[in-house]
Length: 276
Image (tube, rainbow, N blue to C red; front, top):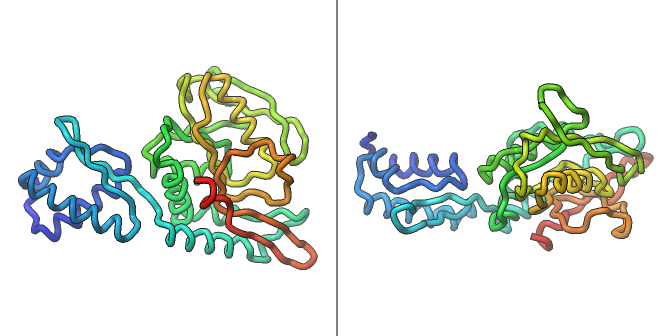
């Protein structure tokens, strides 16, 4: 039990809530932790709730009753989301990202925890009202984004592998066709990694025609699981809608064109504001 001044208690309670998104915390937890009456804790939470909503940090949901408590729901406000997407597009537009063959270098961005955490919060906002049991991605570049999203939604991450590992035990493997190169690939998932009939949010760093994501969708059917949603950091705008294997998804940025000769990259906001 800690005896703190109210100002210090407010700071610590705020930090406690921010570090436990989507956790239902009973009021008795705070009352015991700070040796304060529930009425005082309720007043503190009302102050924190107001600040969260005013600053666009998220929401505090209060559940009444013996099994009730308070739950912090991370949500990004419109202004903050617009600023983040604009900054992401600017970073992606840097000419030195162009690789031979017109590919775009993104690994440095995927390796920035602050950037991935913010992107994860964007997806947590978009799917806040969706019933989800876990986050899924395929190795390897989508892993940072998947874990960031999982942290914000308080959900486990399921990792699909390209090749079966003996340490994964028995697994389900399927073949899928890459939508962009029309080549055949394999992906595999341990039978222990996913419960049957789970609702899964698929997250990936880049989508061109959607072959890899469609492969994960097909893999989920082998577990009698269903897709709760799809979120991609960047989608290719060079693919016609008729060629895309996936139509229902949320993207943060759209790569329109890469001019290797002119050293120019055209990136614009994705469909985040129109689809969520």
